[in-house]
Length: 219
Image 1 (tube, rainbow, N blue to C red):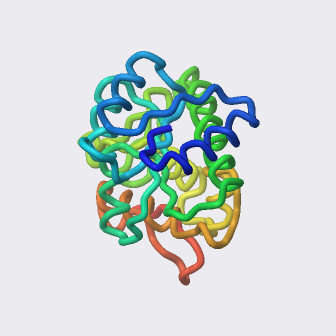
Image 2 (cartoon, one colour; image 1 turned 30 degrees about the horizontal axis):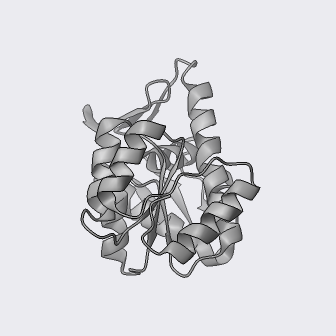
Image 3 (cartoon, rainbow, N blue to C red; image 1 turned 120 degrees about the vertical axis):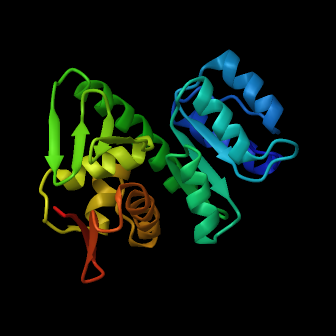
């Protein structure tokens, strides 16, 4: 947990400890990187605004050293700020103030996705939808033969859409399948990740259907 607000850090630590997690806390970017190298955590909760190194730079350095699921906390609600966070390797984000129950649910969902990724790694499976090729074993994606780097969440979302090309998946269904919860108020999370996918795969790959959900299409 990387958070310079001691009240928030203490509350989150106590709640996650009650869930059975061993939680380490850092209050700034440099301290976070030192603790990260020493503890090798399974998941990181990272504040966007930190003294010294900000959360974006901390996330970049963590992912470069050893990829890890990152849930970013931010007081910034603008879409561009959220997309920047996802672009540097964050898997999910929550805006402050946040629900402690939802934070716990998202941490559990991130860890479940890591477990599913390990299970998929034993399969030698390649899925093709138009110009998009998904190697589920290596967790690599190619568009027209060129590799495209996706975050863990973007990859899982793409795989879910690719299971039934052309079928519309409602936002709430995607939240339940990928994030592990289905609160309607959190559908903006899905929208932000879809926008990131469109930017990386091409605007026509993932289509919005009647404003209720998304479908992966064959160009």
